Image (cartoon, rainbow, N blue to C red; front, side):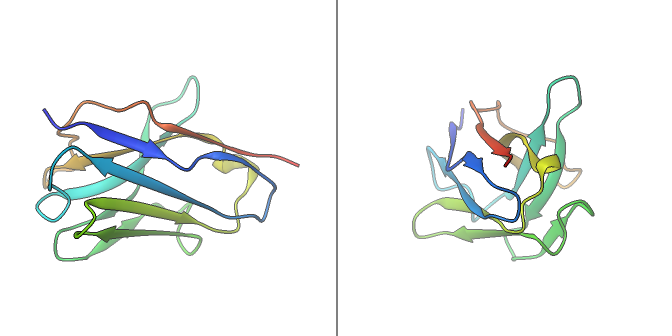
Length: 118
């Protein structure tokens, strides 16, 4: 079972930036689709960004143009650069690997909390 560990969250003012990191217990990010999801209390977790092994990316409309997903195969890391943050981006953020139907393949990690507030 792959273990995923997210980090990099915190408190940031509106308009600010954060970079989230995701580490895996094995070299999987170059093999599987990898994505970032977020969840706020009382709502379903939503996939907001995804990158394929070939480098194709997907972004939810809510984050398109502000967030960038990237991968470093040598370090087995996936990142989410978040710019121009808004209060509505406040959520717990999680990474996971996905199949072609965008179903999560690993158990969810602890996530990392992002709070956007002045």
